[in-house]
Image 1 (cartoon, rainbow, N blue to C red):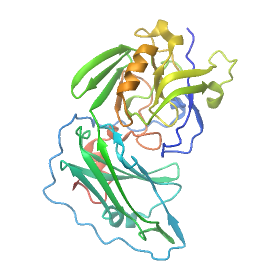
Image 2: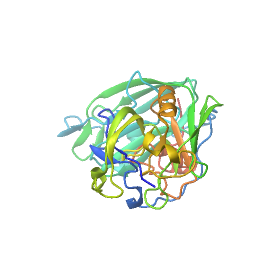
Image 3: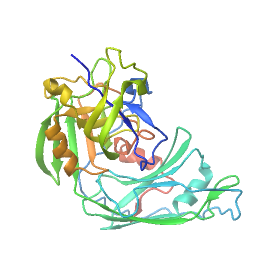
Image 4: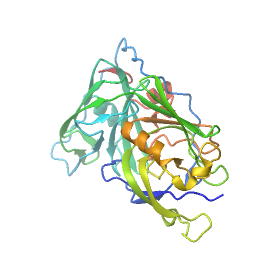
Length: 337
């Protein structure tokens, strides 16, 4: 059975990693296996406000710093995103001193309407320091969120400070949760609690190119994507080689897992997993799904024997951490917007 053609180019707007071209699946079998985590999904319920909040210490200031850093922040101001989209602040190729982190958290105010409790979580991966904010469960649909990042002159490390203050507001759209069952070879889309469609799909070949298991989000809607096996070290003339363009492609991982139309695998939809890690479906179903989806929508993969979704550095795997695990990575704990 022939394997599908899948690879990609990374959207310039995706502030997650410096990647130009990857292959479908992105080499999941070469990644180190991360520890399994308790289920963090939870629907659209509000997190109860905290009874008390840990006070933030004053941030260390460094006026006239030799180096100033402008962190990348997602989502962008004015966007409407899915319920799985965290607030992500990335200090590219920078370490942030641990003893300064509580003060930095105190300079980051998240306001929400309605009020929702959440927490920041620190992570270092691939040379970057990442700081993400999320509630205990997925954001409720319709939530208005504003981040006031008052980082101008705030010390990040010796001789390094934040460059300026920033204010970013965005909106949470409809709750769109896609559940992929690789054993049943289906994708079921649930919108605002109502099942809209169950789609026959084909996932990653279980022997060679297994799809990552766990909760992911849509990182970008990229439309037609050229996929080339050479980007993951497979010659085009190899039995597993591929090259071609694929429509209605939505990226799930930086390394190259997509949901997309894969008409060359039509005989496998609903029957077998034969791809290089992507979730393929008919062009008709892919067009329908693409039209309803947005960045930040949830894709929850079950039934795979592949490695778990990376928590950080390969997209948004935040929801694979249980709430207590998430709080363990915060300096100040739960904050109520």
